[in-house]
Image (cartoon, rainbow, N blue to C red; front, top):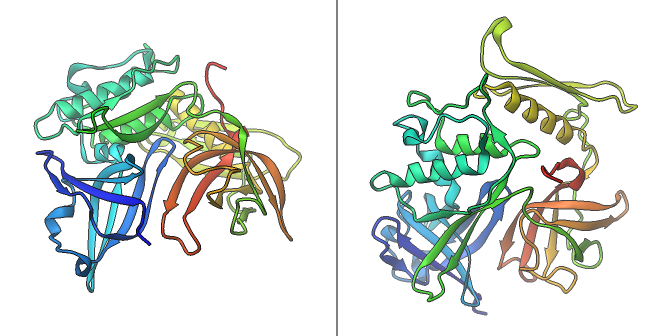
Length: 365
């Protein structure tokens, strides 16, 4: 049976279409929360006339289309040959910033930043990156604004030309804490279907919504027994976080709660964090994550009316019911990403990554 999914590739500099029906098998792709999302697959040159220039790593856009709509888009980063097959790995638009740096300082004069809206700083980073010759992907960043700020008069946020932190790491720093903006990458045809719209969707105070109309449930649409994480080695209700500096000058923040359990501590180093406000938020988020003992981190579902493929989006809270011999779990879980497997045995599957909804604090609510 012919797959309803079509894979296309395009030259990232010229825009020329390289292939409109790339023969990809074992295709897997999907987005993620505050990250690029990934694609993987296998090219079998025996299936069609093939040239490695169709998937030249680092300079090729790749898209997945179904029912006339682009489902995913990104950049090919890795192609590995094994026998007659080529293993492809790609990541969506924000992955490009991991290969770019602030060579001019302060994002080309757009900084430094004091009480700056993090959404605007993200836009500045993209504007700077795409203003350099041969660096314009054509990515559009949402005009979303937020009340989540970075930098104070005593702790100004800088982007120095001599810093080796990538622009991608800078964006991660802006969205990695609680009560900060979120983003995801999306791709679609333009209205005339003559070009591709590459977008960074910014969410404030959040992406997604609490969904009352869909659910993930054992015996309904969950097709594999999910693993319940009960890792005492990772658990802690006290987290000590350190940032830049040495000795007694090293930045340190502690997040601690008492919750009726034996006190367990964890130390985490953030060597690139140079502000106490950022470090404090990072440590609080880490502590919340480490307290999620007994969470469901992933479910595998089929396409059913309980949660049809395409009905959910990154950031949605979905009520999840897991019942088997060892696990009885019900609660709201937040979708932090997924991978579609169109050719999975028995029919298409979606592997959905989850985190407990209570872990997230949405600013402004």
